[in-house]
Length: 247
Ligand code: PGA
Image 1 (cartoon, helix red, strand yellow):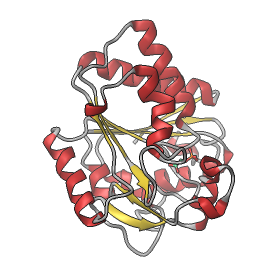
Image 2 (tube, rainbow, N blue to C red):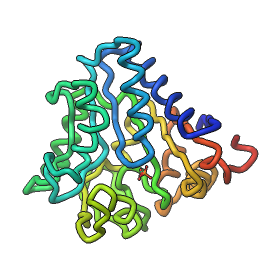
Image 3 (spheres, rainbow, N blue to C red):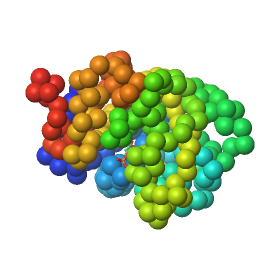
Image 4 (cartoon, rainbow, N blue to C red):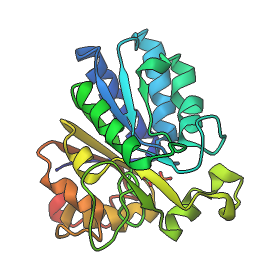
């Protein structure tokens, strides 16, 4: 794993935006895997700003988001789809036909998960997967537990994950869905390149365990150690518990 530590969360977001812009310049048909959450808001802001500045066209870009809540439609203000519309898709005017999402309203979630895996394959696989990390070590919605599922699947969200997402539902914890659909850990590991963005002290422990701990389903992000091309972009706070040898 390559670890880069930046003096601030803004600097980390700017570096990640620059990385994605460079990838898009090299490869206009880039297939990009995308996260949601509080952390990537700054990254999306910098990405939109950078792409506008460079006047780089995104007309061939294809995106796949990591996850979506169950029981929430794409127009629901709490949905991850609407988060992406606000922070990236609308500002860039992305072609909705090139934007891919798990459907949280699908009546048959197994079939929906199979459809998503097949869509990723049909697009040629994900070239660059951007990830966040939960304070509990999750990536996507692959929550800590005794086992992990490799492909896209339906999950029960942990209480801390629901609390972390309450802001999307007006701070009302009861409104946060209890289940979600997510790419599996194998789906994520099949991406050609992975960049994980983590900022803030509350991510320091999970980041240290992901980088330097044993491979453990209790820390899903630790499985990223198996991938040959992973980069972590961290601010000082998120890097504060890394062993000196890994910095
Ligand atoms: P956060 O979520 O940026 O809101 O902390 C990150 C994640 O859960 O992947």
